[in-house]
Length: 91
Picture 1: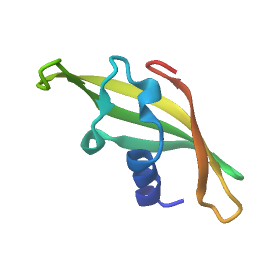
Picture 2: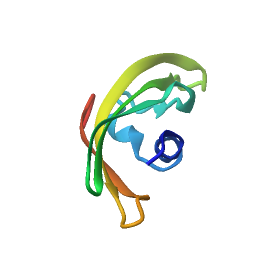
Picture 3: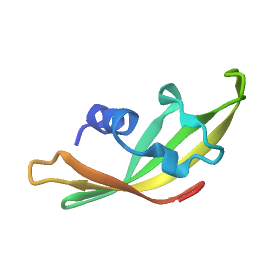
């Protein structure tokens, strides 16, 4: 699993809101993904990003650092099949 594919998965596919704390959304430009463990068919990844918090008027009210650990399951060809938050700021 190359790092670009893993990062793209978390930017476009994974449910990072599972570890958001204020009903904001993850800023993809602040996303950092690190593989902590790698086993046959599975990765354990640390994910960190800034959650963008909005005011009712649509203005940015701030940013909060969020983190999580995700179990990533790989299919037989080594592509990501699914990911699930197993720890984090809200998991």
